[in-house]
Length: 235
Image (cartoon, rainbow, N blue to C red; front, side, top):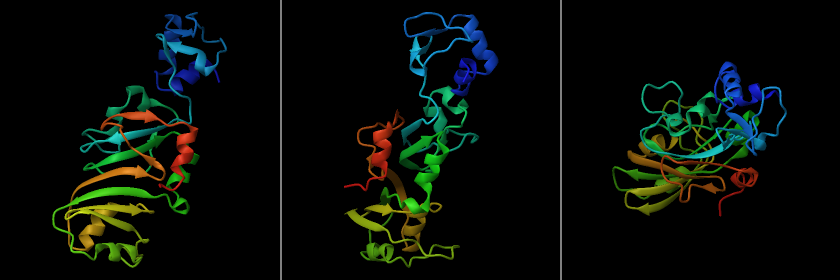
C-alpha cells in the first residue's frame, strides 16, 4: 500500500492533507530522515512529527466507558469517540464498538476495525460471558437468582425466553450478573421483570478480560495474547 493511502486510512487526514505533510517534511523514518510519498517503509519505522504511527488495521482497544457517553458517531451529546484521539474516528476501516453500553452504563467496551473479530465476539455461538454489577432501587427479595437461572424468563415484548444467567448477591441492593447473550437493555429489563429498578450499572469484565486498574475514560490497545484471553472463561 502506498504511504499516502496508508497514513490517510489511519485517520491522519485526507490524501491531500497527507501529501502536504510529505511536502512539509513532517513524515520521517525512525532515524529522522525525511520520507517521500513514493518511498517504501515498514509501518513501525514511520514517524509523524517524531511520533510512531498508530497501529495498522486490526486495531483492538479496551475502553473504560464512563456514564454519560453514548456508543455513537452522530449523537449530539458526548460520544465514546470524544475519549479517543480525533483521528481514530476517521480510520478506514471504521473503528467500531463491539456491542454497546447505554449512556447510563459504565464499564468495559471493546472497539475494533477488524470485522471478522467483531462478528466472532458478538456471535451467539461464542457464548462469551459478560459480567455486570447492578445497584438496585429496592432490596433483593431472594428469588431472583433462581428466576434468572431458569432459562424461562420472558422479557416484555419478546417471544423467546432468556438464556440462563448467573446472579451473585453482593449486598441487599447489589448484584453481579453473568450473561451469555446481549439483548437490548437486558440487565435493566431483567430486574424490571422481577419488580426492581437498576439505578447504576457497570460492566467490569468480558470473557477472560477485566478492566482491572484502567481508569474511567481511559483506553489501551490489546495485543494478540489479550484477544485470545478474551475467549478464555474467567476464573
